[in-house]
Image 1 (cartoon, one colour):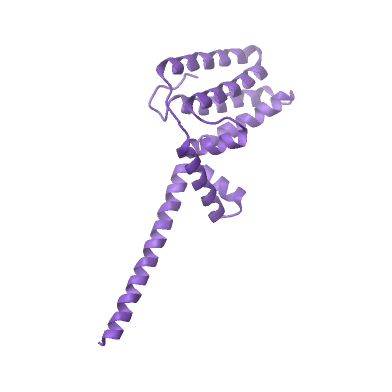
Image 2: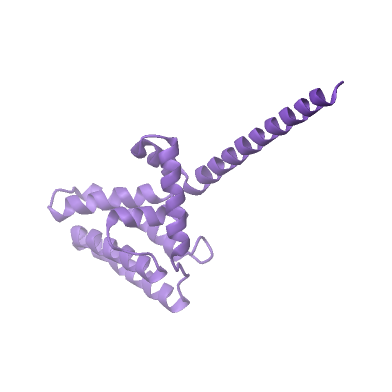
Length: 185
């Protein structure tokens, strides 16, 4: 075998290995995004118009999130929020619309105290999606009912469902990823 032929084979093998390494890295990155964002990965893919645009957006969300100062709550604050949530749930019996509105306000306050920006619902969902992508649909559903409730167009059953949805996100934010005890139903 001539030196030229041997060199051609070596270069071809190196190129194939380099391409394989790039493909494996891309697949690992995609798997990371799918696992981290959960259902939000598919939702972003649908709304962004394709995989590349969605993955770019999700990586931008990660960068923004990494720059935030997300912190666990001190025990005193966690206890206060637990009591406030209990009061909101008690309020539901007599004033369900007010309770849903107060639940929305309490979740927003909890987000703020944990270090999440609260400048608007769309940005809130993007910021939350990085760590809470699996419960984000609960927040969207609750927020939708809260908007109906503001115009007195939500049924009692929708309002009850909104409380359950808010509680799901509330517990996740309160527990710092499961490190503390969630509130009781």
